[in-house]
Length: 264
Image (cartoon, rainbow, N blue to C red):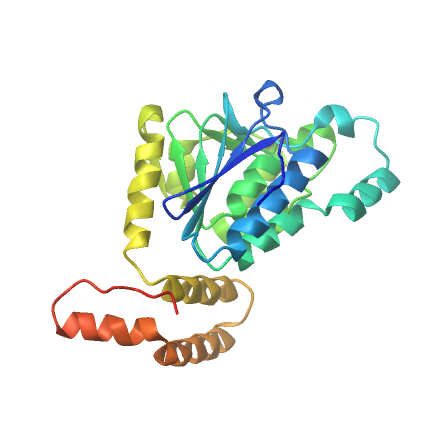
């Protein structure tokens, strides 16, 4: 894409879209400009069939420390509504990530707080460094999470732990988040990108069509009843038998070779 960014770095390499939050002086605060640029990059990467995975990471000492508190200090309800109309709420980013037909990975180091934590929650996979800390500190500002935290966290870690985390605003280390099941893997800080690349290498061996279908079905499980989910899964499962990748997968298995996916 031809857009010029000032708050993020957007690169595509070897089938991976790398989105780096790049406002380290403000700990990659998710202000309106950053969200606007992040939205553009995510939309582009989602549409690009040559992109097999998307990685979101931060520069400097943080993934993202959250919203722009300085900007919010004097805001009134109308200001929040106007900003939402202009650039969309944080939930817009969540929907783009959810609907992207490919895995979106959060590579987290340092602070991952507030809106930054909500951004990571929206991703399909979270790989974190040992120095990463997570939290929803909005309660300390007289607020509640406004980017999906009150709705997503109970689904991810359970009602009681979500209430504890949001009520106290405490910062939780990566290892504890891994034990809760929210973080997929914790590695030493100097091994973070190695771990991300190892995961991506595994993804690249799979059918892009099947990955997109699996993501769609799993996402539905969080929103529909178990009975409806079974029906939805069966429908998607059946549809995959019309794809070239399903035929190639079966043929490769019978011929005892690696499949050559076509992504259709």
